[in-house]
Length: 474
Image (cartoon, rainbow, N blue to C red; front, top):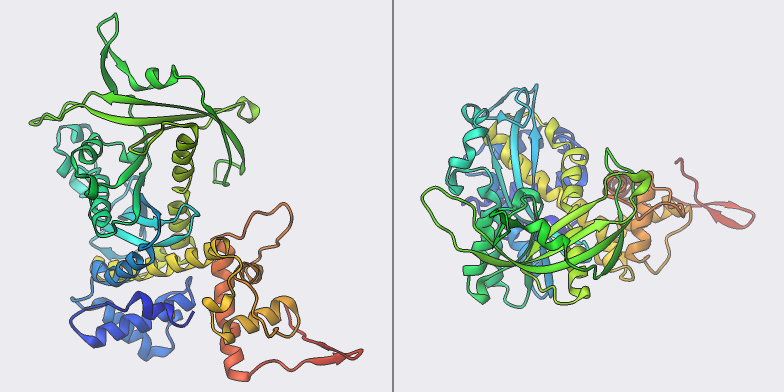
């Protein structure tokens, strides 16, 4: 993994080569210890001071830090048939910490930043990198003005970030003509302007979209009572095309379980909402409605209204829309790695100008953890040396297997299991694949084993009954 930091900083440009080198070195340190603070990740006082000076430099911003990683992400996307561009917003909570420049969060007593992120993800759920990120602060004076937000133009609303995110994906689509980009958003991205943006763009400049519907929008058709027909009424009346089945992951409020949903689909024309000072035309979009069949315990069924520009002419095409939308879970995993694994909300840098580039660095580290976690699943048979040096995989193999490393390195999927076992993954029949939490713990232990291997050399075996035995304390 020693070269990954060089790849992510290859095009870094702070107009000062010393700053470029410092970012490369700091990213390497933070990547070696994802959950550590800046002082804990650095080697000694001199490195720590250099890191703080880097973060305090006016040339160093969060966007400048992410710029080179974004370039590397574009390279990983090139040549792929389909890339999903998943948008999501999370809160960076710094309540109780001295931080100049923070603002109120959803709960007024809490302060921090909002982080709107777009991740590039393959349909196989391999995260290719961070395409876009905006760290923004809500004004203290605006926190109680939600009742007036509908009167504002879209450019002045917090929700405009979803529209801007889609526009940036469209710009990238023009740069990657051989790759179909699909922008994916949750219910907060259900903005009429996104549909209109897609319709009016030229074919070669338009990205596809999948948006989980939030509003039961009006259709142009009027009913006998004079009211407009609604979207849900229209799609609910369509015949069931078939069923889809998948497993939903565990959350704080829900256990992991299998879900079976019925699938309906249709094409509709939407009537535009009222916008003060502007008139938008009607637009046609495709709709896929999936609803859980027989939820356990008679509970609320899991149902999604998916609005999309992708074709839905066949049952298979409708299922593909659902399959792509399920990849949206990757951004939730990413936020979990960033906040629980990298512990970004525990950083104490006193000002927004310092904390923002620090967050950007940890965002790259969080991507790397998620990338390594999923890489074994996408390319299971490739050797782990495509990603690791010998002095990285060999000590892990010896500790995990309690035997000498073989001449032939293990595959990526086998090595992923070894690393995750160092983080507490048990690999039982009832367990799913290793997740990012066990991976970030395992990767930190791998770094420690690698340092010991380099410092003291391979452990010499003890002989028992004519066989070599490698002893270690778990």
